[in-house]
Amino acid sequence: MMNLDLPKLFDLDKMSREPKFKNSFYQQDILSVDQFNRESLSYIFTRAQEMSEMVNKVGSCDLLHGYTLACVFYEPSTRTSASFIAAMERLGGNVIPITQGIKYSSVSKGESLVDTMITLEQYSDAIVLRHPEIGSVAKAAKYSRVPIINAGDGAGEHPTQALLDLFTIRKELGSIDGLRIAMVGDLRNGRTVHSLTKLLMSYDVSLRFVSPDTLRLPLNLMNDLIDKGVDVRETDKVEDVIGDVDVLYVTRIQKERFTDLADYEAVKDYFEITPEVMANAKEKMVVMHPLPRVGEIHYKVDKDPRAAYFRQVQNGMFVRMALLAAVLGQA
Ligand code: ASP
Ligand code: CP
Image (cartoon, rainbow, N blue to C red):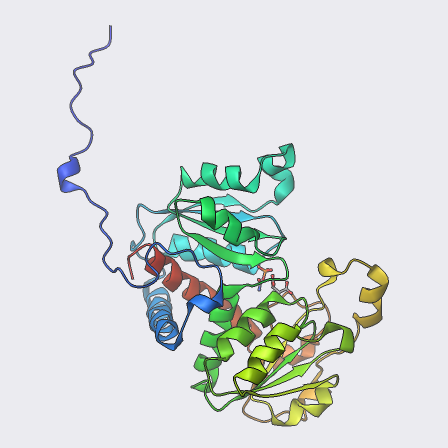
């Protein structure tokens, strides 16, 4: 017989997990950049800067000790998945990684997204979700008890990417107001472009959109820009903008969003940023890219000090550390 008169394992009266901060992100789903304004962006960026200083000095801390994040990616990812995992681990938290795609989760047996989310919330304090359908992350959030963070929903939004993009521009160039920013590539399907364009509407910037005719910025976004009085122009040539932009934000043609491969083939080699193209750019400017690149920026450009895309990658971790800590009430 076992002695069931057990001493208690935990002195629960002495243990707690109280939120230290209850700001506007506390326990909130992060679904769209529409949830941010200049004040809340500044808050995240200040915290992200603190995160970067902490990482550079000591590597990690225990701010999120005792918290668990489920990272669920139903579309391929390198940076977003790895940086959320790294962010959580550098803050002393734990991760449930479901990053091998639908094939290796019970979704492939027919389980619904909602059931999957309700299952994962039993184990975790927040869920990061990437899914191929527009609106799917918002739908999952309706049913989940724990906060859900949108890591990309089809051709919809990629809000945390836009946060790190803006953080990078600010860090590289000092401020955002007054800049001329060009976005190049697949503006129709690029969710990073959609989120960044929306965020930039809160700033005093000029925008240039460079794409083949078939991949222009969605009309609703263009109309919003015009309604807000933003100085905006469209062209199909990088040469038209390269000489007078402060930021060249390059994107990949989103092959996976094309229903007809012939349409993709027709535009896939539409442009390439080479050292020759960069020779015409301002001395003080930055080239950014959410990555992955598949031929839009020549490798020789990497040595150019204006190439900021790998610094942008690292900023992603700092911004996600700040966001996770804020959502969980610890920043
Ligand atoms: N990685 C970014 C995204 O998932 C950009 C891209 O894939 O081209 O939206
Ligand atoms: N920028 C970005 O979202 O990269 P991944 O697709 O690799 O996550």
